[in-house]
Amino acid sequence: MRAIEITAFGGPEVLALADVAAPTAGDGQLLIDVTAAGVNYADTHQAENTYLAPARLPLVPGAEVAGTTRDGRRVVALLERGGYAEQAVAWEPLTFELPADVTDGAALALVLQGTTAWHLLRTSAHLAPGESVVVHAAAGGVGSLAVQLAKRWGAGRVIAVASSEDKRALALELGADVAVDAGEPELKAALEDANGGAKIEVVLEMVGGATFDASLAALAPFGRLVTYGMASRAAPAPVAAGDLLRRSRAVIGFWLAHCMAAPDRLLRPQLDELLTLTRAGELRPVVGGTYPLADAAQAHRDLRARRTTGKLVLDPRA
Image 1 (cartoon, rainbow, N blue to C red):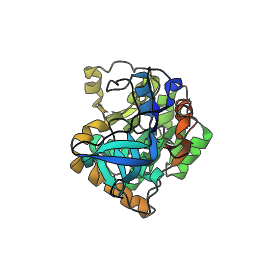
Image 2 (image 1 turned 90 degrees about the vertical axis):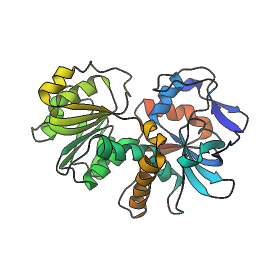
Image 3 (image 1 turned 135 degrees about the vertical axis):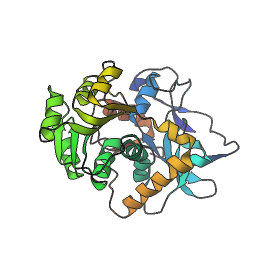
């Protein structure tokens, strides 16, 4: 079958179209004929072997697919690996049936990035009504959904941070109250100004480096910064326990992989809620681009260069 195979770690150039052996489903697994595969920023780290979980070569990347099971059910699934391909194998507990009126792209946006946004706000940040929320990368896959969910769940002020005028316009269209340029040299002050001069209760942060540092400095007492990525590939300054104590601040890490250990409690109900909102027109998954499978490297280049919005999708049939 056709797949994207990585035989040496590196940048987008290592993503090569290849003919590989089709996967075989074992006990408790399902074979899926893939109609669309999701692309995530974490995939760019996996290609370099700089992700949280070490990768093994040869590697077919890809953490989620939409498609059809051999008994004809239309599903979306989370994977350990192997999504950038014409066929993939998923564990049954991580496979979710799809309503006919939800597109593949929307389903892919929700199953990983949507559930991440849900947990960032509910499980990690414990968002309370009236609290201010900063969403970095607010036009991205997670961010575009987090902006909408934060508003829906009663945030007092949603502050979107994005790198271009078009992306900031999209975040405002999705419900953000104000948008801040990610390139602001005095980001801490810009965030506080966007909140009427007050410090921030909740920050969702996936950039790392100086962005993390400025966001932490902008936190109010009892504020929570939830970190779920390091897109800049730059580590933030070390966080001292005494500094957290003096300001009554919290830094919380989140990785969706831990939810996969208990999908019936930590994934299925959340995805069901997101699908219900989407079908009712109350949540808008943003699909920012669909690429032929052979163009996976270009999708990674565009993602790393911040040229994209929302969810990126690969079409293995193109």
